[in-house]
Length: 348
Image (tube, rainbow, N blue to C red; front, side, top):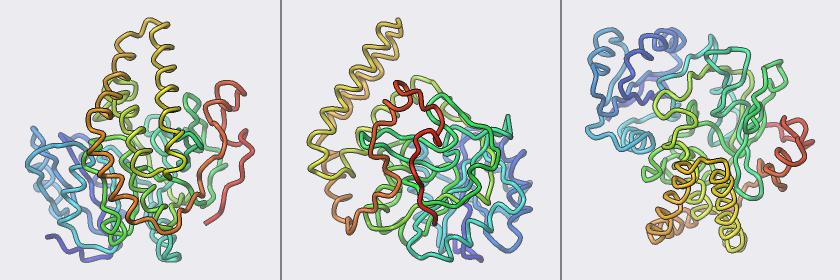
């Protein structure tokens, strides 16, 4: 068990991440001062990651996971061994900016109902642009489709200060997730069975269903390389996106809504598959079918997970759910940017 000297553990899950630590750990450590402990968790790397960190960054604490069962499982195992008031789940391919930590910590200290939050996430290779995974805060539409301020599907905005605010969102990015440790464990932590992708949305949804808030703090900025483990647009990412999105609905959605939404989503996924087939993208279509069959074959498992998730519900906090179709607005109405939705946000 690692007991932190500060109230916050910045926990970096790493798989063959030596090149990222060489680039980004110096800045993370320089910003730590006496504000947070830095912990690198080696997720069964096959390179010299663990020894590199121990040799070059002796102030960094380390943990080792014997078997790599994915991103969610790595954090699930690691965080059971770390004692702190707050966790920051920080992916290895993130660069922090000077002063990134304090605005997030201040927001959490100011509101005990704020269970988790994220900073502004920008693209490391183009630091004027928002980044795909998290951007200016995460939302969900009435049909369970996810989107962000600053990134609507294929359209990514440049940062002109338009999202410097602090607002309540539906989900915060798992790439840089600041979360209360006690609440993280209370709702069951990250679901190790999701492997990767949307595991933070699942966690945030459970926290929201328990009545808590999820936030975005625009005064803090980090930069994400992105796609360093599972690349954007890869078959593996496509599989987890389709599979895990359905699992999220099974676990967390209200029963009365799930009864009509789940069959509808199967149809909509089928339409997406047909579109891929017509474009000659046969492999991608078969990936969607594979994702669906996993859900059908393991339905008993996911219904059991639903029972556990439903048991912690108090008052569902629905702030951050867009009660329209973001798919229709984006593809049909051509509302390519978040402000075009004309949808008010709620300040923290």
